[in-house]
View 1: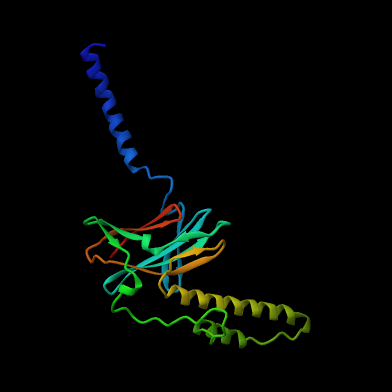
View 2: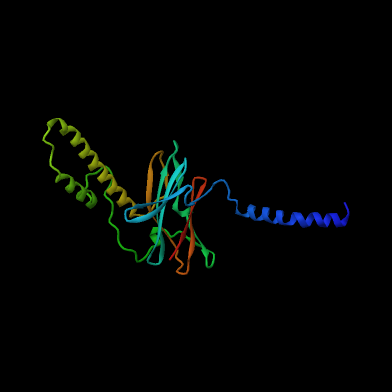
Length: 226
């Protein structure tokens, strides 16, 4: 091949090589799962917070983010969908500021937090505790519904009322758990852990990425901070 032919071949190949290189840079590792609208990620309103949710065969991960005092607060919920216990620790989580100036906002341990609103201490498990406000309100509404006149329908109504009470109590317990720091744990199969995670803050941050490494997978939630 003459020098002229070689130069012509390089001229036609250069755009292809450049495009291939740019594509290679954007390919994520197989263990990285990014929240993408209309794909694997959807929104959900819960406990007055707007969560983003990623569901995979191994985990269902929910995140809501906000500013709280001098910190970036992430409300996190993680469900183990596997048949084995899965270890997770919030110390591995981080916030990546992408614009205007890239930086990493590190995890802040609960013992280092200052000037945060006080949260109630949850009642110990397996002990009787007063009916939570959410459940109390719901149950009072249920009690105002009159019983049916047909005795044959009474068992069905009682079952429905019992299920409603259990659901209200469970929701109240979940809400109380979400108001406290997320703890490192070995999460049993088909169980859920939830809580708050605090990070350093950057008042100039605009586009951020919440990064949650969990048992070999990395969940990413892009957010626009306004």
